[in-house]
Length: 290
Image (tube, rainbow, N blue to C red; front, side, top):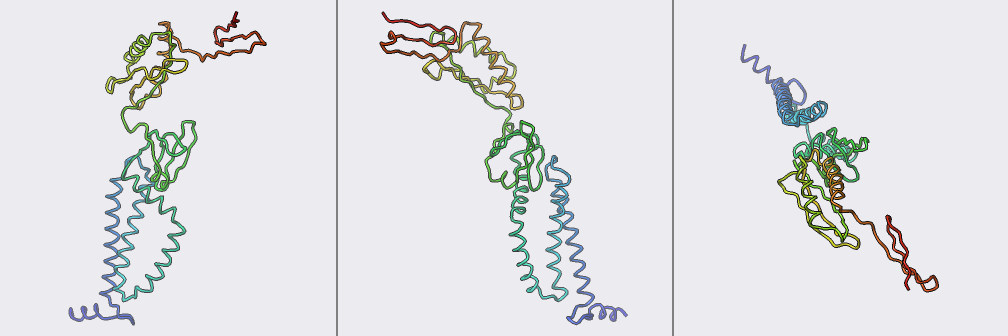
């Protein structure tokens, strides 16, 4: 009886010699391929960033599962005694046409996967890429969504995100900003630097390490320029920059140190009595030569 069942199991039931054994192996390979694809996709989805949307995670998992299932299907076809040469030719032509038509889609998808792995940016980062500058609000498989500081949402293809230079303003815990403050030549530059240093050191968010740098950097036409470089936490640097600039201006004025206005001396010809006019926004005077 057992020998009879075995003979029936291996006996061909189709014209091309396929038996129940071949069909069973074919089905087992398909089932194993689907199970392996499902397990691998779940493991990969767990490794993806937590802030990645659920829909994107599911899409990645489905692509991985279908890809592994397709490999299992092609591997199982020889059990049905099917000639794969014709299928490969037709499939190759179809894949070529489909690939050309969807080249940008594939490129964006691959770039998105690489961005998920490298993670140069994450949701909530303030970045600048090309002409767009704002906060990352979503990272999808094909594109990244940025909300500009003006409140405008911009969709950037992941291929552009992958190939372009990205300036990430908050990836470092601290960020430096800089002023160039001009004072009059009649003012005391040493006193000015001390006043600025005192204001900076009193601010709670102006970092002591790295230390601020305050120095005379240029003797310009109308002013002595003092460069001020300050480090602050990336999350509050803009507020610190605006607040310190106002306080520095206020304290310099309290010490009698003012920011000069541009001055010009104009000479007139003899037919208008050779006048020399000194232009100053606060005090305009005209002097005549004897």
